[in-house]
Length: 318
Image (cartoon, rainbow, N blue to C red; front, side, top):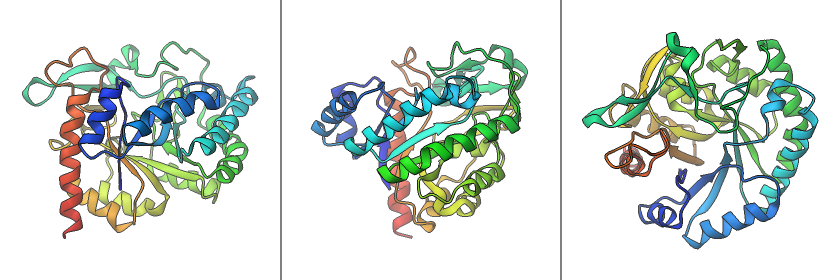
């Protein structure tokens, strides 16, 4: 498995820090059109002994999801991105199909162990939910049905999967977070194991993959190790995290302090032969980082990597 991390803030010191603790890959946010931007980031990353595993976040696909008049424009930009990723040697795009929002929370400073801050969600407070993505935070649009979303997703895959496969890039779908049936008047479709099986049935292309976000699947109430085995080789990228609660009401946890058997999860990844990027996600904000980006501060990530490395080594020796 490739130990992979987001880098926030994206500084040379943080890149070096990740390299020092044994991380080998990073994921970056879409920097905008043009190969030059990707190459410039790659130069910084490789200078610190790391590689870029994936692009996720800030992707130009919000109008694709809605199927509006800008659909073709964004498809063209995504095709260009895939071609640029081939040139830059970046193998994964992690995307989601939540229309009008990205991952949302109603609480950004819920208390965890020792007073650390974590994010939480309560469906009864959905009207005050915060979208934690710059590309969707202020987006407003008409309601959309599940049938419309599936139609737009199929069009998206028909357009992009042939290009992605030719470029050696995998499109890894992230589940809806939280995985509700609807949110603020818009349907959600990537909210169950069955929906991911349907996604895989839409195309047998090797470029059609799954980002298995453990926390979001935990929100669905499924058995995590069993679901890893059920989705098997379709899992191409992993977000390693945990929550306490249900899809309607939950809080994030430290990676070692939630209800999921994380050791059994790692053993399940090994059983299916997973060797792709795996990154700790949505870490708690520790002392001194209370003003940082919720879920993406550095100190909590260092703890998570140490825990993850221990689990992997233990599973290898079983």
